[in-house]
Length: 75
Image (cartoon, rainbow, N blue to C red):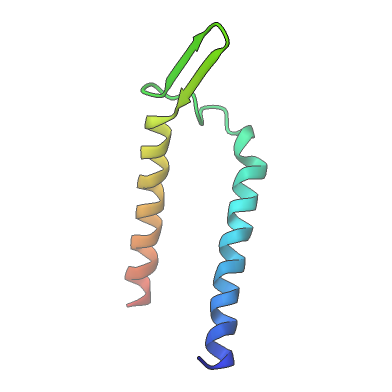
């Protein structure tokens, strides 16, 4: 690998890390995220189970559309 290719790869990973950090920082301020119909929440005594099925599907659809647009624009 040439240094230019490694540099591009590091920039891509840095951008992904930046976006993940931004999501985790601001993710708690989105009011409906994690409380959608279809998210499974079970509280029984000391046992708590939280499985955000619908939230995962929604995030997956949004990321799929974003990546589809990016690849379509790249040509």
